[in-house]
Length: 255
Ligand code: PEP
Image 1: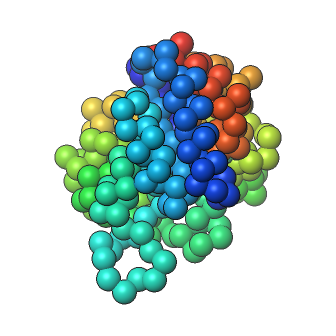
Image 2: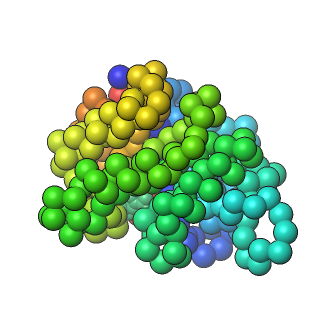
């Protein structure tokens, strides 16, 4: 069991930059004793510079929730890898199911964004996950294999040293329903086997695989104790220090 990685995805929250700074400050202060677990928070774009500045001397990294694959140009509303870098990000989430569902993200755009993130020196957190309907129809492995394979299409293993993959079953995101540790472990092992098949045993073993989907303080330890679960991508519970910090502490204990 290696070092765990706990990342908070704040989504479209909080409403104000000052509130984002306050949340970041609380997480920073309440985790000051954590010396092993890796931690990141992913606030909305608008709050990134302020949050990154506040966390500059801390162990907490900052990530964007999305990026566009072009670096600059006439792309109204887009944010590029160099912009995220200059805002203080070291991570970026790519292909979150909400981006796929509401913003037209496809496996192809995920792949383009992954190239752009790697080129821009950002550590990508690539999200994959199936719907309940797909799971019930027995398409679980096909869906995950396609998402992983297409996201990594054409990639050179040497560029993937900072890759992070998050397995997030869509039916577990924001629903309060968590995958059982066994269900999550099975899919993490499967994703590792895909990395092994496409690249190498070394890459498969060193790529952190995060579980996401209603992770809470009362299920974090059991999930994080599974062999192939290296961390958690936390949505709702990352928005309050009292619910996020215990998850980080579970990661610290298991690191
Ligand atoms: C997420 O958005 O990545 C997520 C896992 O959300 P939640 O923890 O709220 O299910």
